[in-house]
Image 1 (cartoon, helix red, strand yellow):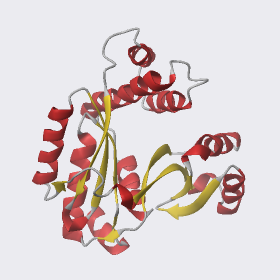
Image 2 (cartoon, one colour):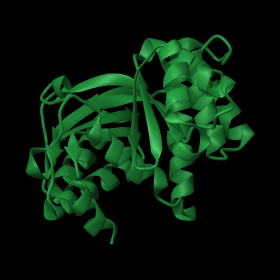
Image 3 (cartoon, helix red, strand yellow):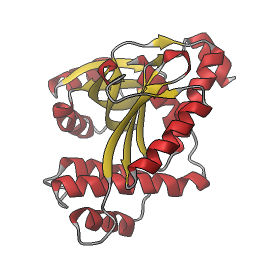
Image 4 (tube, helix red, strand yellow):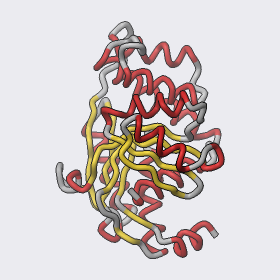
Length: 249
């Protein structure tokens, strides 16, 4: 899971600047719309909606925005016509990239995503070209200073987690998506405050990058992440510690 860990850590620790807040709110609202459309507008009975709302609240999305997104999803308001699409491709160095998309115009989005890949030295591929390189997993990140590894492993495994690893100042707990709610609940019951709770795609194997290639790959990941229609980006790269130190320097 090193590829996702590096990107998750880099993305998560980027400062949230004001000119990106509106874009983030838009993405979180889209996730709420789709969750409400597929599972109904009650977060008590719709787990996907509950987590989408939690993500929105964590990003300070106003209550009225959340309520409006739920109504769009349930059809009470117009604007809920979003399509879920997965785009796949390759970044510099042969790195596999998966983009989870929510769009109201597939042709426009495909054209824009293709251009981003090309500008950053990558290439958008055919459906299925890299999906087989990833597993869909639940991921919960807990800061190291809030707990000890042994205690976290015990409660996580009891809740159905598959693995707990240290990564850049955090413990990363991974699980099957079906166990995600139980793991999140166990972490919450232990009074721990995770820095990240998400269902994502983790690479089965990773590609080590040198500094030059890492810069190109990270540029692509950031541009994709900044696109309004991209909900999540996953990739199978690993940046060795010495290269990461040079990039951060």
